[in-house]
Length: 437
Ligand SMILES: O=C(O)CCC(=O)C(=O)O
Ligand SMILES: [Fe+2]
Image 1 (tube, helix red, strand yellow):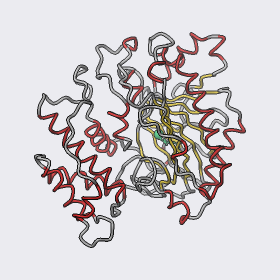
Image 2 (image 1 turned 45 degrees about the vertical axis):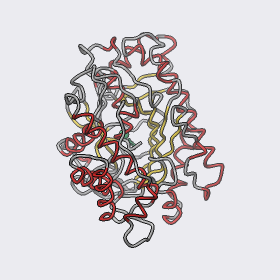
Image 3 (image 1 turned 180 degrees about the vertical axis):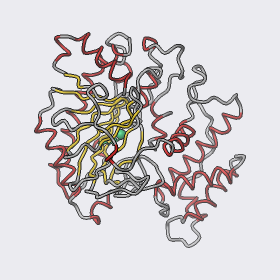
Image 4 (image 1 turned 90 degrees about the vertical axis):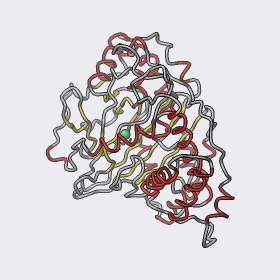
């Protein structure tokens, strides 16, 4: 997005000027003053409203904690970005997502705001009792072994699953059960660390790349919702693309030693290999040549989320293990370790919430928002959530696979669905903003 950015003061200068009690942190009041003043000085109209919005969003994401230098830097960036977007939007006719394929403008903030509002109306039950187990038609099983002997049939099944629900099982995917079991152990080992240790690696404290590290139980981030998610998670990511985010930069807990880190890397490498193998088939499912997606995936970005859901005898209304959301990825490869079917998905084809059956060994694959967009809305990026209403904790590892983060992916013409509903857009300009990248 070619926006002329507003001049950004340094976070150090802001901390000096607005840290009234000189404790090296900005309280929410001080932060509000700081953002408002910076925006006003930059000539931003409506600086008070904008700083109020940013502050509200920040308190929702970070549970109202005081702000240190790293977080302040990112908030200032967010403030000036938004002011630039507002300025740029004023200087041309406003464009909403899906309305004008030529505009090259994706309003990610507006998208996230509407998603949050919309999610409240999704009427997702917080109790499993009334939710049926999905039929084979709703969550089909696709056998990876058939992709060589019957590639056309494989592609047809892939396309059908993506159109009907956007979720399917991938069986015989070639990843050894040992690797999957090791994945489950990794999150259990992380979970068994004391809170004092885990909180050293808390996400978005300015010490590690954004969106990586520890998300404590009841965090209201990822997805950002008013009630905390009853899950704890640890997230790492790697980007060979423009920002060159390396595995070395991740908040590896030294308490678990190098073997733990290497095992996480090994798990992610196995998933990445499989994800890359799926690309030619997805290209074909989109109605394009097998090599269609290759240029977009030269330097992929992935995120790996290891989640641990505590046993829970019941959830309050509107509370979930992970709240209803859609994935921001191109697609996601999910491994679950659970006793009861706890993953709930909105089945577009039957218009009902269904529980994804447990299927040891098979991976769950689901299309994310970017793939939906690239398919011109012919594929579903299904809403889903987790309720672990069980006597046992539940673990999952979600591998979110994305194209090169700044690669502007166009809608695949072969996908159908009429004229392109979206401009070419890059992850960093669209879902990356939603994801807080
Ligand atoms: O734990 C699961 O089964 C799903 C997790 C999920 O949807 C996510 O992390 O985006
Ligand atoms: Fe998800």
